[in-house]
Length: 501
Image (cartoon, rainbow, N blue to C red):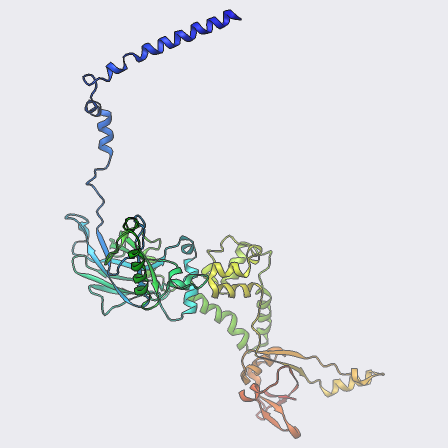
């Protein structure tokens, strides 16, 4: 054992000696005379790497610059994106500036370019449901647009277009060599897209984005040139001025050291470069006959009008078969679910629910649908899934009076109680409109009577007189009234009259 320990000590001392010897020349090799950093950097390998690095003076030069004449907020951290407050409906100038160097993009010299200005969501979560959010806003503000161009104040803009299906965008042509200014008006406020209404300070931020395109060989403006955007918040009239003043007063109360952490407020807002908006300009221009509005009208004509205007007994069967297919079943496939959405005027959400089966869609709660589709369409989709029908304004019960011969036959056949000889079966008539024409229509549907053969509907009054049923009489019907009705031949022999008793 002692011999083994001795051998270890010998080996260890030998290793230490060799290590000291290997380090003994390092100081001499790194001396001033033998070593120069400039000589090392002059080696070919370092020259090759250095040439591949971008030069400091070779910064990217955008072809255009867009400047909005609105002051930035002073309460923004030093390295954060600028934030600009705007008043709802107020016109703000965006200067379209040609920033090209000599020789840059010569193909647009003497030609027009097209720019599309949009107001979009800054929050990525809202970007995913942007279409649904805008549809909800459109429902609550019918006839209004999120973004407008103040044409009388704008300068140098040509061929201005606004699409009815894209309320948040405007497009125009302009000449980069001429002075061009587009005055925009934002009509939505930031708090309109928050779940809870806290006021302008808690509202969601938007983005103003400008995308510019040049003309292609086929004459369409689809070749992307440049995009830039800025962050904004929109307040009710005068609210942006008050918010700007509040931020300025808060900054004045801070110490000099704290102020160094914040950006100064600038009189104008320079839009910074960004990626182009996903929608191409071709989609914007040719998207006026969008599936949503067109399909809504078509569906109304296809599914609603025949049920109420049916003039033949065959329509009643059609209506009942459609009614039975209105409900979405859990066993519905993805394709059947898509057809159900189209039939019920939810074509704008077919892509959103492209992987949903009937069971998947039925599992969504009311709150889920409101969050996905917005308040208007969310509630409508929830009611459609639960097959909630519209409550009728008036309900009456009508029975066709049996023929006297049938009554006599039943009385002869009965041997105990004559009250059971005649069976009166009533039909429920649900009126969505308090009109005499609605009564006539629903009677024709309920009793398979051709609508064109009904001349008049009368109500039997005192002493057996016949009173014409008009809109005023229908409006004075008591809910859940019961009537017997019979038919008599018209005086001219064409058709017949209905008498309610």
